[in-house]
Length: 214
Image (tube, one colour):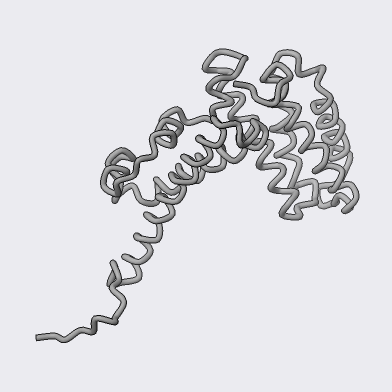
């Protein structure tokens, strides 16, 4: 009969592949808990719409990515949450809706508008992430900015938004550069500042000029 020590750590896996599986499931669990916490914080006004929207969009994106990685182990999100006794109804609702509450309850009604807001939000996040990662060359930034400017054009009144004008101005700057030419650090810093302010203005405009668009 095999002997074992009571002091020995008990592990749920016996191979590297099983360990990876449990790590992925744990990550999915963590994303759901984080999303639930964010939803409840937003309802309590503990976070603003400008803080909530990108965080929620990112968590939903991470959730979708993780679900693809564990699809053999997770038939449905409801079964996963039941199996691990997760009482995170706010997160489950947000996952089923698929977009942040600021989009779901946007003052600009209609399913098409909801998709546009979600897509434009993602464009903002992608561009800001690129700048944070020190991407500086025209061929590294142009496509992201062009997609953002295109997204802006879908919204009524956007021509009057200061942020849209600044994004168009930066697009003109990039268009005048060679593919390998890079922005200076000073330009990149100003660019990020302008994108951040355009992002805040974007959500204020959706909410009729309020911090909370719901």
